[in-house]
Length: 99
Image (cartoon, rainbow, N blue to C red; front, side):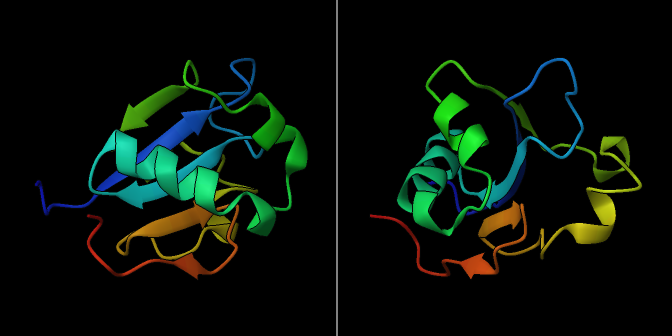
């Protein structure tokens, strides 16, 4: 298993790829990131995004935070250096290594 964490940015709304209607996650792999999102649906306040989230949702691996919306996303992100969802910032962290 890869033990290096990577930042993922899931583009739910392609018309605003770096805006507030998307999801940011730090995980060991894209599969791990998608699993974290699915497991924490009830924690996410943006139900519209979750309804749009699926297997075909584009993911950017190792997203450069400087690309994200500087006025709304960046000031409101959680910790991007720990495993978990950091945008929207729901303070949801999972520190255990997945099975």
